[in-house]
Amino acid sequence: MDITVAAVLSTIWLLAVLFFRLNRIWLPYYVIGSVGLAFLAIFIGRNTPIEPALQTAVASGVHAVSGLVGVPTETFASAPGALLVLVVSQDIGWTMLQVTVESSGLLESGVVFGMLMFYPAWGLRRRLGYVLVALLLTYAANIVRLMVIVATLHLMGKDSLLISHTIIGRAVFFVGVILIYWFMLSRPTLSAVRKKLDKEMVAS
Image (cartoon, rainbow, N blue to C red; front, side, top):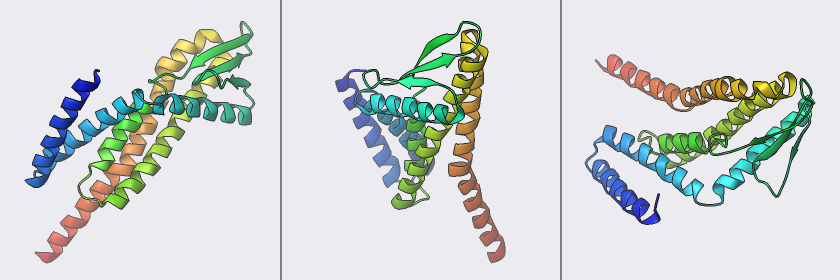
């Protein structure tokens, strides 16, 4: 997306958010605000050194965990996001995995950032704290997802790459992200609603 187009869309988004905020129309405020902020965070991440840094961090994290469980891997400082995995079955040798935008966690991190930062029931300090925890959990879930792919590739051979990446890895990450959303957003929301209903019942 062109920078000028992104700037125009961001301005329209900001004006819409301010309108709903000033008029205390909370549902459109939250939906438009969180979705717009997620897109903005992803756009900034993809057009700055944030994405390469995230790719390197994910590859390094998988490399470190692989060493702990005895799966030989290699990373290269000159190739951010590149991870070599030693395959020990079928055709023995090294296979390269590339941490791209789909597996860097940038998309999921942008979504959870937008959802939590625009939650109207919390103060700024609480939102920032939740965002930090959620981003760390998203990173950890992504490491688990890639470790499943690495372990499957290592033990079952290169022919398993498609199914481990497309089906198993995505399923593991999807479950992990849903759990993060539940504990960081849905569960506190339901708890707050329940407390509010309890107070109203006592008052009546």
